[in-house]
Image (tube, rainbow, N blue to C red):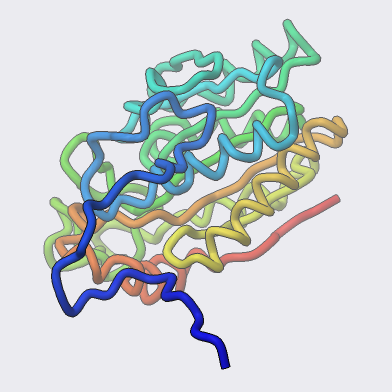
Length: 263
């Protein structure tokens, strides 16, 4: 038997040669891989998937992203993509205007749960009901992260936030809005799915959902929507490494993943 060369770096002793970067693996549409979001945040993973799909579908030159207001808005200045900034909650309406003015444009909105479901619920519902040929992406962590980490309309019962320290209570705060389920009931919605980015498998499945949503727009079948459950250990008052399991046990137990509609 011939000796097989070792292809891993042993960790039981100091390395014999200095480490070197092989590749930073930053997607082409992200100009700088570094960001200022909290450690363990799931939003960069979700954004990476969206940008990879745009590049893989070869629609970069005719795509416009409309950003809402939230932690993720920091990415809007870091993309090699046309970006339009909307007022809080109004991204679907801005996207509608862009699409109607330039029908061949591929339009995607990026919003959080606070931006979409609290500030702009009517915007996304009416956009879906009209069957506008745009794609909306919602990053759902159940907190208003950028403005301090307080309750949103998607926060699940029992979830702690800055203003629900004992957990969300139905009698006091009401019940969470399951936005994907709501949109799936509208005739104008052609594709609706809910994914997550807390495991490698979920990232892969969510990316397929994003691809299908963009394909729905390219085929002019109507409105397409992908909700992505993301981690927010800072807003959840937990350690970073606990966030993926917390997402499964809390958010995903209520906002159940899967494809809700595909016409």
